[in-house]
Image 1 (cartoon, rainbow, N blue to C red):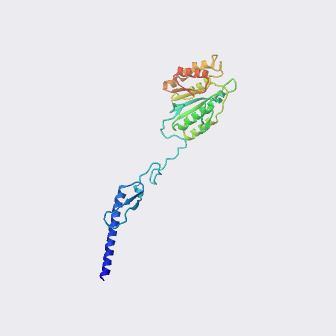
Image 2: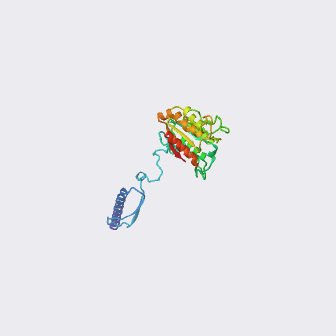
Image 3: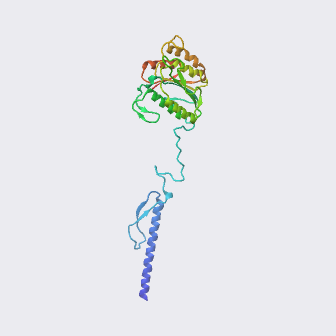
Length: 301
């Protein structure tokens, strides 16, 4: 009976030591757990109770999901903000960053765009077309179409505009020798925007550069409260000699008549921009002279 009691007493004592060691290990592990909140940790726990506990026991601590901080590049949780919807190439409201060859456009604008046969010349270098395709050598017309399409994609829906195509007519450019897309200002709703972009993509080249008629139309067919007028060409007015403007040369007629036509719009505060594309120095000289005469901004591309 004494032996049995001795054995039982020894067993109870051993169990007490074991329980104490486990409690100590749990307390130490809990201290480590509360001090870390990052990735899983492996560390060694040593007992300090003096009991017969295994030394160097390894503890793997897995942090709770709520303890983990969001790391850069990791997926958002279910409760986060939903991703933004794509804008299908249309601008955010009040983006204010619409431009044409670097010149800001907005409000009401008329684009006078040269589509004469010389616009097929490929002297504008490499670039991307309106679909983002790389082009090794772009024609003048491709560059202009791309810029105009990108401008139309970026303007606000409140923007009003029209396009006057500077070219057309049979030799020697007898009237009608210009064409307008709408013939009046239209608001750039999504439907109108898409229609205009398709019209620009599909526009063909015509013979001649009837600058006098195109600028006359830009001044007479649209209201005086215009905000921007853009005149883009790669050449001098053609045909060169007399015509519907009288006996003076075409160039002289443009320089003589345009300031009178444009006076009311200029007084309103319309911004005038002259864009020359290509490498012909003679036609560049004409555009620079026209810009200087009328207070226009000169741009070369």
